[in-house]
Length: 149
Image 1 (cartoon, one colour):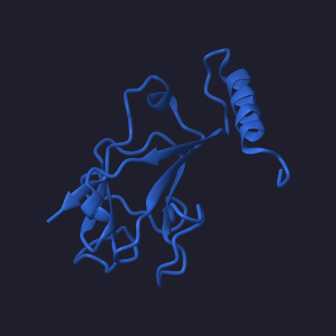
Image 2 (cartoon, rainbow, N blue to C red):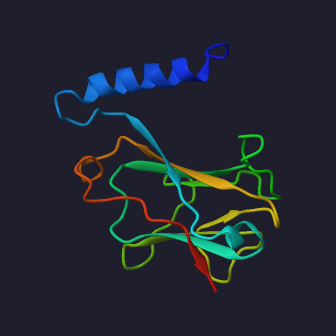
């Protein structure tokens, strides 16, 4: 799709997804990208942000990745891939919740961490691969990224 205008790509994805959802049943392998909101501008600096899931994620597979708003490509910190997924490294807490921390340096005792660049803006795209019914009936939603400390 490298020569297609972005509006055409968006239309095609909406049309194909809409048709798949017409009968009300979730498709087997649909991908749902969700942009996560940052609650304070200070978070793009050297402070720590946290995204928490209280009820688990309604999908068999999920991934979160940070991007550079200027280039729209992956952020380029020292960490090889600024991302986590349920297949590669995302760990749940003992109580079933999950927390992802975003910071230039790994916070103490943070099982899930995505490295950011000090003073550099970033945004998160969170993907649900094959979302389950709680996503469709809106009984689960992604929370905002909250500042920590």
